[in-house]
Length: 42
Image (tube, rainbow, N blue to C red):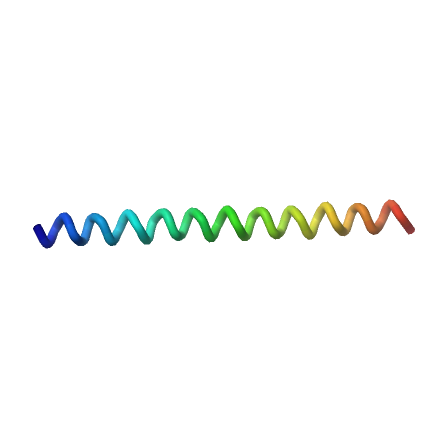
């Protein structure tokens, strides 16, 4: 039973890590596209 609880915790942390990485990747891409947009408008 305790092993199953640990497994649950591990999978939850795993999904949270993936979500954080996706959000960071998304924010970085947003900043890149914004920078390119500003360059074009100069």
